Length: 273
Image (cartoon, rainbow, N blue to C red; front, side, top):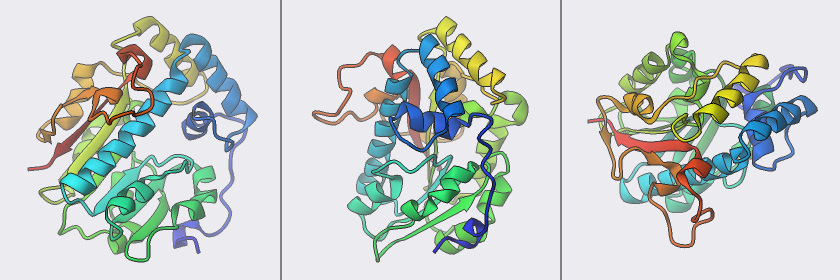
């Protein structure tokens, strides 16, 4: 059964592209509409490696969850900007390491809500919840019934903001939003964040930004230096902020031979003192 916020009918606007559905297109999924595919193909015209960006980012998220659950004993995860379910999902990675893990997913795209049942099949020992919410309203995420009944805010929580914050420009308070989310978490919690960058192909990424902006999607790709600011006051785990495929690479991992430019994203995991 869907959580309370998942009941009822939420209209899906198929006239405008949505970044979660465009991301699904890059990953080779089927949960998108022609308008999303058209916009994604425009991006691929300027940035042919966009599909590799998405795959490398997804694999970074998998490794970060494994490291946190296996090596740091994290048993609670709050994933904002969940995206269309793509197996393995975050809870499947976490609960494979520790079946008692608890996960809350949040996303603002109604199509993700429509697929929420796929996200709610966790282990009997753990718990998984989903709410429709927007990172630009952090209080609504933090104070929702789904979050408060699933997660224990007296114990460490891993906040996941993967491929999300570049859709929150500075004028929308990107850094302040992350700070508010982190401040609500107890000591010993973690932030996992990945973010598209302009460092490797400034001209191509500028044209890619234009595609999103023309589609009505706010976006601000940032330099590595500016992405690092999201981790201010936190203790970055080794190797620090790194291009996603270089963060804790695993033997025989997919995409092992790609270049930094082909990965296109930075990622990092940091602990709250």
